[in-house]
Amino acid sequence: MAYLVFFFIFFFVFLFLLRKLRYGRLRLPPGNLGLPFIGETLQMISAYKTDNPEPFLDQRVNRYGSVFTSHVFGEPTVFSTDPETNRFILTNDKLFECSYPGSISNLLGKHSLLLMKGSLHKKMHSLTMSFANSSIIKDHLLYDIDRLIRLNIDSWSDRILLMEEAKKITFELTVKQLMSFDPDEWTESLRKEYMLVIEGFFTIPFPLLSPTYRRAIKARTKVAEALTVVVRNRRKEFETKEEKKNDMLGALLASGEQFSDEEIVDFMLALLVAGYETTSTIMTLAIKFLNETPLALAQLKEEHEQIRARSEPGAALEWTDYKSMAFSQCVVNETLRVANIIGAIFRRTTTDIDIKGYTIPKGWKVIASFRAVHLNPEYFKDARTFNPWRWQSNNNSEAVATPGNVFTPFGGGPRLCPGYELARVVLSVFLHRFVTRFSWVPAEEDKLVFFPTTRTQKRYPIILKRREESRSNMGFGITAETERRKES
Ligand code: HEM
Image (cartoon, rainbow, N blue to C red; front, top):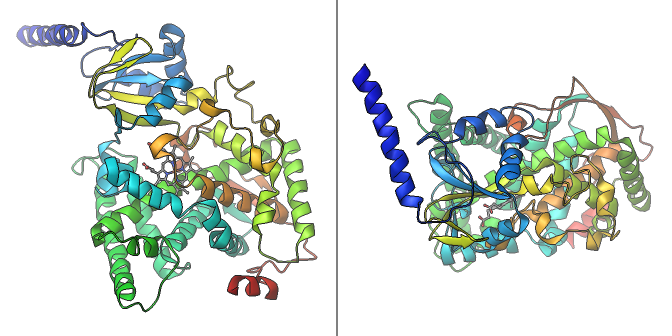
């Protein structure tokens, strides 16, 4: 036994010395690498298990400054809570490669946009952007977004789990955008399998240790098989020129690249993943924050009542309606800022990198925290308070205040979220339909907190009260005029 203890002490001391020798010549950002292997992982996990994970970053920022070194999940890691450094990391994808945890990479598939690198990534990123940009949304996605949101809202009972409903809406919208399918039994069974895949993202990626991960891998195979059938059929249609659909799959097939079925399936699966939890969480949290801020809710309702008063009963929303939602854009920004759905991004250095007088060694993990910036009172007064009016300085929807480096809910640089405009439109349309249709109260003690890991557990039950509608016709809201517009 004494030998064993001695061996461990010796081994740890040896690792300490080795580490000193390896990094001693470099001027690392200040910080603490902690014990070999374990580093500061336990401190980080225990901070992130609470509702307020900030202390882990706050304490270290106070001690070492806005860029510091730590050692978490088995490797040395540099954290940045500094907007300028974050921007540098985001914009230099040759120096900082994307680095997702193993669980995510395996389930996404190797051809997903999130894992692509170099020129292929550049090409596919711009293809994705071109399919979710303002003019596409304006020309045809807006119509489907509005229609599917109303279709869902119409089926709601008086008590709903808002997060679940928001997820359903988001999934149906993405399927429509990707391959033009309206919700039916097939899409619903795809969604059930797909939810199992998503669960796998939040677990340890070892099939032997985790039944959730095993289930997720199986479900991924099923989802990929189902999507492969769709891709094959559409490829046939495309080759025989039978039909051309105006969707993402159509754009991939018509792009002139010879993508294999597997590549297209991985690509579609990643898009389903990227927009699913993010958009649905933001929809749910916007409602929660508004519920807690009655003045903001009143102002938002007023804005949407005015839009409704201007349009025909039951008419679909127009692009001009969306563009007139100035206060809604403030609510969207503020929800994104406070909720921090993607709180940080993960990268790995491809070479030794000098930054702010320090060197980050090649191969180190780098975590750029957006959340730390968004909740820093230096950049946002009363940063923990939901205050949509803070975005009102340039009060029109064209020029929502976006202070350059400090507000980055959608990232930036070559990996800027291609769904950033789409997510805004979906949330705005959802808010319109929701607040003009219902009043509501949370059904149980409302424990939905900001920290994202709670998002999968908390489903935000609410009791809805339908507002008396003299001008209801809310069904699909498809009037003769709207139908004409759609056809034209
Ligand atoms: C509120 C909703 C959303 C938020 C907060 C959000 C946030 C982000 C962020 C921060 C990134 C950058 C990740 C990185 O740099 O590593 C990102 C990437 C991405 N997002 Fe979103 N996103 C949202 C909605 C969507 C939607 C609706 C789509 C669907 C089109 C989407 C598709 C993607 C894709 C494909 C990437 C990877 C881009 C790449 O690596 O080139 N996102 N998102």
